[in-house]
Image 1: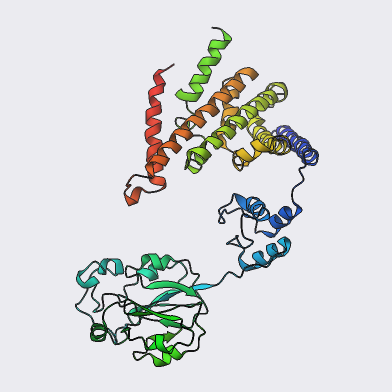
Image 2: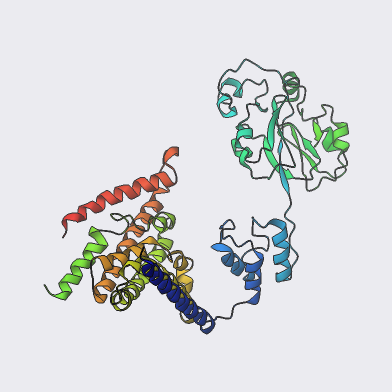
Amino acid sequence: MNTSAILTAVIVIAVLGLILGLFLGIAAKAFHVETDPREDKISAALPGNNCGGCGYPGCTGLAAAIVNGEAPVNACPVGGAAVAKEVAAIMGVEADDTKRMAAYVKCAGDCEKAAKNYEYTGAEDCRMAALLPGGGDKSCAYGCLGYGSCVSACPFDAIHIVNGIALVDKDACKACGKCIEACPKKLIELLPYDSKYIVACSSKDKGPDVMKKCKAGCIGCGLCKKNCPKEAIDIKDLLAYIDQDKCEKCGVCAEKCPKKIILNH
Amino acid sequence: MSTISELLIISIGSAFVSNVVLSQFYGLCPFLGVSKQLKTAGGMGAAVIFVITLASLVSALIYRFLLDPFGLDYLKTIVFILVIAALVQFVEMFLKRFVPSLYKALGVYLPLITTNCAVLGTALTNVQKEYSVLYSVVNGFATAVGFAISICILAGIREKMRYNNIPKAFQGMPIVLVTAGLMAIAFCGFSGLL
């Protein structure tokens, strides 16, 4: 074996590397540009894997944008609250609390409460079933079909079909919104994680029709709206809607609801 | 044949006939990645022209005066990688200090090309074809112009393509690759040029 060839190669590369390294080191000192010291500190605080998730070119790009005030201190989606806090401390501002959201399915018409118009034997996919007459086999055209399009869309295994309707596991939900896109009935909505009272119905049918089709349907009677002390409830298209920003979580609406569909999640 | 006409032939050959992307398949990553908008594609093209020309010069000098005389020909690939990476790093620092406007314009593209195979490929082609230093620089420049031309054409097509109704299975990368393939076939037409 020709050991001298190996040695030559190793020595040449090592010497070349050393020279280039020294050269770059000297150049870095000689061509040093004064940048905002906060920029370097923020770069150090960020995760540093340059994923580009923030929309800026790498972590240093985001650091520069934060210093220039173009990006909020919590712009890094990977670092989350911990990094936002650190960056906020460097910038000398309070981090806006990123409100945690979770998905909610606005239907409570499970197998016992809502009847079926016919037997559906097609593919196990709501988007297929929803194309059929009457918007699927469920008696209520607005309700959850329960074939699990949202379940397969969820990347976090946070949504499951329980007794014929989709149910979100609030703690596992990351509020990515994939299920909202998947649902052909547009039943899923992102609401604040700490929301307590949700109208678990999406039916825009008139009261008597709702009652015929489902035992857990909002009939748009307006009792909740009348009794809410904070005027947080509105009736739109014969359907109650709770404004979670105004809601004080007193629970009066849930008590007064004759159909008991304002649920305590 | 005079030097000038030889250089001209090399230039046209490198820019069109053996286009670095469309017939040699070097530098596909930036070609596909940075061709969403004509503006960024232009920036990338400019950065590549800058880096490849400079890298051709430096690698030709190193080969001619360091590697060849000492019989270290077999080390050219790894030495070129090292030198080109250091060179791009140095150019970045230099620009940041003295030409901040150009540094801003080139942005992330400069470090992105550090380890691009098109740069290394050009340096090695220069050695393979036994070009002199002047020929290497001209060949490097022409190769990079070829890259800039093809990435700008693709970016232009992709900008127009956004208004088209593309079948779902083809949306995103697939249609871009099909487009790039058709462009490569179109560039085959240049093969009769020389």
